[in-house]
Image (cartoon, rainbow, N blue to C red; front, top):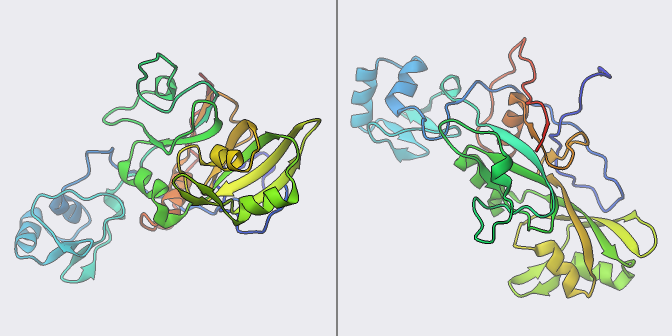
Amino acid sequence: MNPRRKASPLRPPSKRPAAPAPEVVAVSAAVAPPRRSAGDEPRLQKALADAGYGSRRELERLISAGAVSVNGVTAQLGQRIAPGDRVRIGGRLARLQAVTRLPRVILYHKPEGEIVSRADPDGRPTVFSKLPRIRGGRWIAVGRLDVNSCGLLLLTNDGQLANHLMHPRYELEREYAVRVVGELADDVRRRLTEGVELDDGMARFGRLAEEGGEGTNRWYRVSLNEGRNREVRRMFEAVGVTVSRLLRVRFGPVQMPPRLKRGMILELAPEEVAALMAAVELGAPPPPRAGVSRRTRGSRRC
């Protein structure tokens, strides 16, 4: 491995039992072709024509005749298609990767004191005021962090990708570093991993590992497969433990890079976005192309 190459922030979800400082391995990501911006997906007949399935007029006749389907539903003339849509002509799957383009995904190291909302009547700072401008769309936050929490926040300009990342179906693991007051007793740790009752149902940590600490402050690494409001804090409160700091360090396969300091932004490279989309089953990317370099925005302090 080239020692000068920077490690990718994309990591596979950990499936190992509880252990301090879990080891993670980089994802092997294929490079996908560029994709149109959100809200500007191609019309079905144009996408098929661009991919070489006939002229637009011929394809319009096929669509009108009911010979084309999108995601198992008979297509309508003029409808638009998005990345991950499965288009079939006469029952045969059409390959349309060449006419799709990847969404943009950025990582933001959210500091305490900022809210994940576009506006606040109380005038508190919002993460959206710190983000780079985007043409033809807007940034969508993948999940939230409460005002007193910090760490990794994913944002994308693609609503479909955001929904897939947050959908319970995919059970993407969220990992947090938590500083609490005092050391957790064995029975408390057992309750947190077996399940505690919250006002919106049972909750449990998939993993809980001790990370050390000094004096009364102790650090733990915990993971969840869901993202209910203030769930980590409420779980510790339910067992009588006070959380003094909460930092999200991973969301699904995306690990917060060490170089992403507080208040800084990093954009994922195309191959990393492609791997992320594959992780949530948004279509398999085509084979990698030679000569494609990493496209990562320079981190900037906000």
